[in-house]
Image 1 (cartoon, rainbow, N blue to C red):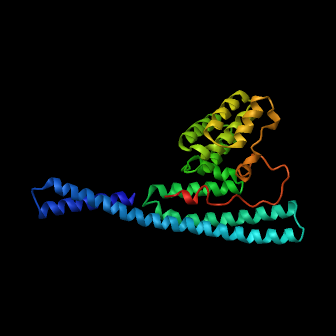
Image 2 (image 1 turned 135 degrees about the vertical axis):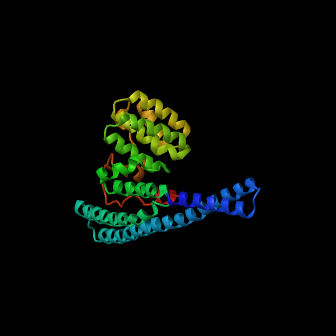
Image 3 (image 1 turned 180 degrees about the horizontal axis):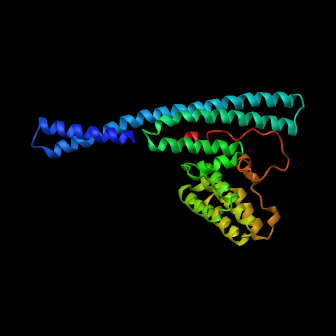
Length: 275
């Protein structure tokens, strides 16, 4: 990483320069060298951060612009009493095209990798989130596997794909890390997802125990009701539908009464999380 190399070179130059001009003070010269090293790193990282924020902001603006365009188009079609699968397919197609266009913007991060090792991971995390949104799961998987988890939605995406690929041990590990990191209401989606997975795996007793824990750690009525249903043998009434779009955006289930829906609002997982 160039930042580290430049910092080390700066420290060496400062130390030898001061030692030559002010001999006999190795401690102070060393302190000055360390300050030089840290100062260079700070300046470079601030510049890289600004550049990354500009790129991510461009991605967000591109998607929000398309969302606004689609919102107007949907309203127009609804006013004309038009809808159905064909319109839904049209909306999804335009959303996918817009997201692929936004993903191309992330290529601008490539030159920054030599300055900041995390730059590529931040961009790849966002890339994985966007590919997941347009259901290009095969392409999203390698990015989500190595994603920087800064929010529960990104973790839920990763857990979903691990489950779909039959990696239950990794799902459990991801869940345990998630509930240690995300507390209170931030853990609701994670508990809901993992309990759903346990039910699908016919591990109902474990799901009951999990939801008993969840209802004491969150205020979610959905989790509470699901615990009551499972604890009383009402397996068919178990449902995460009450979480709304947050749940359906994982594409594990579809609403019972499908209607034209826009993609889950961009930015929750990725844009606000990078620092």
